[in-house]
Structures are given as C-alpha cells and as structure tokens.
Length: 620
Image (cartoon, rainbow, N blue to C red):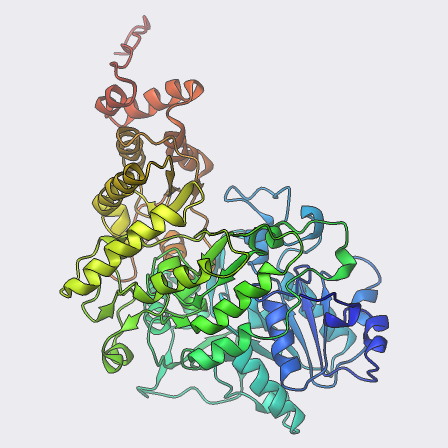
C-alpha cells in the first residue's frame, strides 16, 4: 500500500476541494460519524460509489450544530443534493444507555468524545440545511432514517412518533444499503428531474402527492398514525404487516397517512448480485481515517481496521434485530477474489502484525448461503430461515466458507485469521438430509474452533427460557448446550484452553424475574460467570420494540409481559451477577417474593435464611 496524499480522501474542507481543482460539488454528505474511508463506514461507501459514477462528492463529518453553523455553510450549495446520515447507529442508541443515561463515550468519534452529535441527528442536520438552503434537495439515509421510515415507537421520548419525514424536512428518504438508490437518484436529478417528481425511486420513501390505492394487492395501506395513537392494538397490527413485508423477496409498496399527509415506502431493489457487492467493496478506499484526525483514536475504526466483511444480510430474523429490516433477509456474498484482494491490501497497512481480527458479517457463517430453490424463496414470507427450525430449502453447506478461510490463511503476511463476529451455532448443530453437507459442517466447526478463535468465541443464545426464545425467534437453549459440548471436545482434542462467550439479554418482552433466576441457575451449572450481557433496549422498528410498546405479540395477538420500570429491569438484571456477594441478599429477597427459594438453594448450595418474624400485633 503506497503512501497517500490528502487528495486521496474525499474532500472535507474548501481547501481540499480546491486541491482537486473543482469549481463545483455535485453532492455534499453530512455525517454524525467521523470520516473513516473504509467499506465498513456508510458515508465512505456512498461517497466512493457516487465518485465511481463520475460525481464530485464532499463529506462534512460531525458538523458543529451549536455555533454560527459555519460547518454547514463552508462548502456552499451542491449541484444535485445534500445527503444526511446520523451515522452507523441511531443517534439515540449511540448517545444513551438502556436506562436512558447519557453515555460517556462515542465509538465513532475521535478519542471517543461523547458530545460531537446531537440527539436525533438526522432531524437536526436536515432542519439546518433546509433553513440555510431551502431550494436544495435534502436526502436522508443511514440506520436512523431507515428504521424510522414509518410510524414507530421511540423509547427515549416514550411515545409513538410518525415517520421521520414529518420531523426532518427532507425531500426523500433512502432506506437500507444505499449504493443503488443514491446512484439512480443522482442520475435522475442530473438529467433535470425535480426531486418533488421522484416519488417512485426503489428503496426510498417520501411524503407523496400520489393517491393512496384502494384494494390493490401490490400495495399495503397501513392503519393511520392517528388511529394507532388511539389504539396500541392497531399499531401492533401494522407491525405484523411491516415485519412480514421486510422479509419478502419482493415486498409491496407501503402507505401510511399522518397529519393529513401520506408517506409512501417504495419496495427495495432486489438483493445485490456478486458483481454489484464486489464493485462496492473494490472501490479505492484508503481504509484509514481522514488525516484531520492525526494523533487521535477512533474506537470503532480500531475495532475493524484489520477485519473483512464477507457478506451482507441475515436470514436469522431475530425479533430484536434491525438487520433484516435494514440490510434484508437475503444474503449477498462477495466473490472469493474480491475478499482475497482486500486481505492482501490489509497486509500492507501500517501496523498490521499478521492477524485479521474478523472475517465475517452480520452472522459470520452465512457466506454464500441461500435457498436451493430460488423461486420458492421469492414466494416465501417466512420471517426467519432458521426459526422455528432450519428451513428445508436452505443450503447450510459451509464448504465455501471453509475454502475461504484456508485461502486467506495461505496469503503471505497472514499469521492468523480470526472470526470475531457472532456465529450461528444452530446451523452447525443442524443435521441436513445430505450427509455430505453434515460432514463438511463438522469439518468447518472443527476448523473454526481449532484455528480461528482468538481465545474467546462469541455466540448469542440470548436466553435459556424456551418461552422467551420463542418470542425472540431464537432456537432452544439445548442447541447451545450441545454446541458447548462440541466446543469443549475440540478444545481438548487440540490441547487448547479457549472460552466460549455467550451473550444474554434481560428484560426482553416475555421475560420475567423467574425466567432470569432460572437463567442464573442454568448458566451456573454450565460454569459461566456472565460478562457479555445487556438490558433490552427498544430500538425503532424491530418486532421486539413494538411488543414492548404495545404489550401484544403482533402475530398471536396475545398480551406479552415486559419489564418497564427501572426497578423491574434491575430485578431481572441482578441475576446476571448472582456470584457477586453484594447481590446475594437482594436475590434472596426477590426469590422469596416470587416463591422460588428452591432456586436460591441451587445458586448458593444452601437454603435461604429463615424469614424474620415481627413482634407487631395483628390488627383485628
């Protein structure tokens, strides 16, 4: 990798624009994240994609919204449009904990500073740009806009909000992975179309002047925002429909009225082909932060700078996860050649010591996987290919991934390639009707555990209760126990002392204190002292979030209990830390209250202390 000059990054200042000899800019992108020129950072991907199609693109990362707004003015007007994104995360998830406390750091900001983006970043940036340049189109995107494209529950304000388009004065919203829609939009605007006339762009949403269709099977008309405010059951009804559409190969056009206007969400583009996803990853990224951050550390970059993304999409369909609603259920995989090319580039990066930190994706072991019968997949509306059991049409053959690992490890300069992203162990435990696939998957499992674990393998059972796992759309905990036995057997075979690190969630819809107490007992029996844990955080547009808000399971229509108050959440969370002496008394009191002191005996190998009697006289 050769030495870079300042002009190798997309320009971020007027001086950098002049260095390129430009007298105009086509598109200016505003981001809540620092500018890292790497394929894992959305604004870099979109900027490089537009650049590859001949457009002049600049990026303004983390503009100051508190002063005289000079950051928003410094590059003037773009010829085509402003693009706005809150960054790689929803700004509220980025800034607040599950207990709604301000976080002390921000992984996407130099030196982790926590004060470089506002709440509801997309709305704030869009309003400023529209006030300063009312005649320039504003297009919003990224995870924040994507997951707020329809009426959604906002945990931080504890209310149902309409589509973000009613709060952010944007002309258009692009959802999901944006390379194709943003390129098509630029072409149409450059050809002279008005942004107000572009209401049919795939994978976009806008407040429309089009008439809402009636009784058309190609369109889904949701219950209005106002009706959903009156009845949480109506919101639950909408949630089911939106969830079903987000898992289809060819979703319908979605319509929803609010405040006398209508939002239309156009169906997405089909999943990317191998050539299309390769083209995105093969763009001339420097793979490094912009030189303006010299001497500073961007934590999110440090985590991924020596990692490679092999595919997009996830067919797991977990209720609490945003991936299927954002990236889609259908996996798009890069070619082996594209991945090896990126690995070779990493070996030339400054500071690379021979260890790839990750070779994976949303779920590491879905590379090159999909349905055997593609036509069946295109008709299928099933939200998960893995739950309640692995789909018979799903090809779970891990041979392409096994070949990729071995090819990567042969590259000069690679000492080890680790799998840092989560693995779906249920796919490894699954027994196919094809014994050749079963043999390959056993070989993959052994290869993974023996050669690609950096001491700790992350997996996500999420809970031990089948009742809770059913709501989460996750497999039975028995599969995790089976995988753990396999993990330990392979460790012993190779003389390794590696750990399996399970992730668990408390306070998820459907989870009670008793469920958490039983989780503590079960994980104790398996010799875990849990560290990778979290309270459920309701994030926009997921099925679990809407269950939290409405109190109903959208599919069964039955009520679902959810811990809501701080006290209820802490009562569940404490069971993660049963092994800490300071938690023992509180756990004993909780178990006494729910009449499960038998679990105390199992946790602490001794009976609970006798309940103290009071000498107060009884009232007659």
